[in-house]
Amino acid sequence: MANSLSRRDFLKRTSAFSATVAFCYAASPAAETPKDSGRPNLVFMFPDQFRRQAIGFMKEDPVITPRLDEFAARSLVLTDAVSSYPVCSPFRAQLFTGKYPVSNGVTTNCNSGKDVMLKQSQRCLSDILHDSGYSLGYLGKWHLDKPHEPFVGRRRGRPGMPGGGIVWDEFVPPERRHGFTFWHAYNCRDQHLNPRYWTTEAGRNEPTYFNEWSTRHEADVAIEFIRNPQGKYRDPNKPFAIFIAPNPPHTPFDQVPKKYVDMYKGKTYKDLLNRPNVEISNPHPQAKKHVRNYFAAVTGTDEQFGRILDALKQQQLENNTIVVFTADHGEMMGSQNRMHKGVPYEESIGIPFIIRWPTKIPARRDNLLLSPPDIMPSLLGLMGLAQSIPGDVEGIDYSAIMLGRPGARPTSALYLNCSGSNGGNRGLRTHRYTYAINRLKDGKNEVLLFDNKKDPYQLNNIAETSPEVVRRLTGELNQWLRKTKDPWKA
Image (cartoon, rainbow, N blue to C red; front, side, top):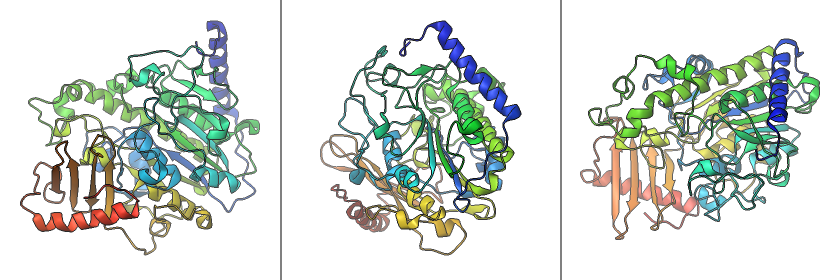
């Protein structure tokens, strides 16, 4: 093992952790109320590759998500939230910096093949919360560093693939954790059933492996952080903020506990791939093979999120805690005969954004076009820290709208993908239209335009027959590009 533990020592360590969790379930006293009780706590959970359509109450995918359905009924649901750059690292950098990719520098996924990572000098949401007196915790996938030094026992996988570690995973030293004082995380490693984490005090060569589904394990640790027995996980006299970033339902789809797969027993791919933009007579082979596993991981995530909500309630922290459930991007799962993300279709850019703060945020649905850079200033606004929003933040503070008050609303959300030799593609998502320009190798443009009201499954590209709409949206896109300092021209 990478931390040179013997099997006996490893089992002893994991058994001790499990025993601690079991003890705290039964005997942990109610959490001490922070002295700064005027500031709410924050629980922010964002599983990877969890599309908006994959929640039962949305009545789109045939998924089993009772806890999210119940949570949404008591929360603000932003039905049109968009992942402006639907790829892992760019979303995370936008979330924490409040800036779009060209400004924050994270223009693609962070790995050892690219000189891209979140700069230590960036002033992040977590830095501000730390400096404002919060105890901070981070659990799960970080994916904002690139591998740059080897550690003992590094496992090589197929070149370029996340499972190997040499390309993707990395130890994140304390000075690069942006204010997080409790750390139980890794950079990027797609091993859901044998996850490894660097804990708060662990050194580079000391990751610990856990023989458990990663989302379940991270929920266990999050519950411990919330319960905080003997003040072990955080300062009980301070408000807290915890970010929980499970890798599932991201690939590999088949690394999910059987009990969740069995909940879809009797359902075939024809039952589960129910979207009209899936060619069900000849679906993408990966979608045909893995849609049951993908939805199983969604259901497992739902159960673990519910356990975290239960812990807040048991500790009498529910009323003074903002809880957010969102995702970095979606998953195509056979729609448009595609898999995964990085494209402007709804299954890729559409993310859940559900936020609850009892007695403060009215429960309802709202079509606010929230983008990832808006999350940082909006949370700071909700938490009474609007004055701490850095001047170079490009996102908008929509906390007033979240609280049910009037406020200016965006007419569009930016879409971009910076990968590719020609600068990638750019576009917009409005309440009615999805518009995107893909720059081809010959310098020509491929233009997509979908009327999401008349054509919600984006089956008919109407760009050629709607020149006036294209002209108007091109002008609006160029305004976005100037605002975000993007040299790409529509």
